[in-house]
Image 1 (tube, helix red, strand yellow):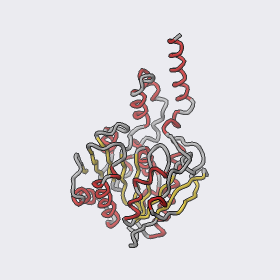
Image 2 (cartoon, rainbow, N blue to C red; image 1 turned 45 degrees about the horizontal axis):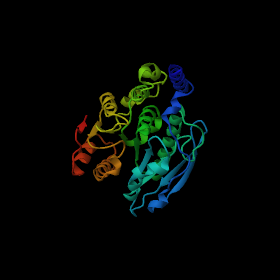
Image 3 (spheres, rainbow, N blue to C red; image 1 turned 180 degrees about the vertical axis):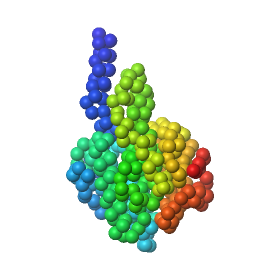
Length: 307
């Protein structure tokens, strides 16, 4: 009898993958937990459409330091919840003089629809087009900052979309390199699916995996951030992306950091601020901004490598 229950459980897991495995990458929450008002920031609600017409929602945090804006930062957040919990990674940029655009993928927050890999890439493409349009209208540089699954999505979209030509620099924090590989690793962590990690992982398409597109971001500068202590997305994913990317590219490899917490640390914010300011001030930035950010922030990143 126990063997029968075990067989049924395994079949249930396998059927759930077969019935729509790409949606297992996304864990949305529709309710906003807080808004920028809660940290004393003004913001505007954005309503726009994905490339397939799906209604999307986001926030525009205008620069709030009383000085002329430095540029526009488009943030693609990580998995789970929505912008109301992820904006904590970027709101400080608005305090430092950046316009910050955040948005929710379909099914997240107030955005409509249900998330899947293709749909989320459509959403990111639409958000990139809107951010580029606003940056051009304001006469400001555009920087893209993606985290975790948002970083993986950003790499692929920037490797495919013509709007990428308007981007001055790209910062990617803790992204995975392949949907199939990260699925296999996560399946291998669960005793129930461990024996089936390889066959089940092949149910995930790698057509939109960032490893296939990261080499197309050049000549736009790319900085990859990863932590050796990240148990959600291991650092070897960023190392693979670094090896595949063309210059100018850098890998900031950290110790003692959990998943996507780098922008919440003092050192992280100093490095990101120095990097973004150099990109904004340099019409055609190359590797010099990456080196400058590493030096001016006061603390060199352990394992920093520039190519």
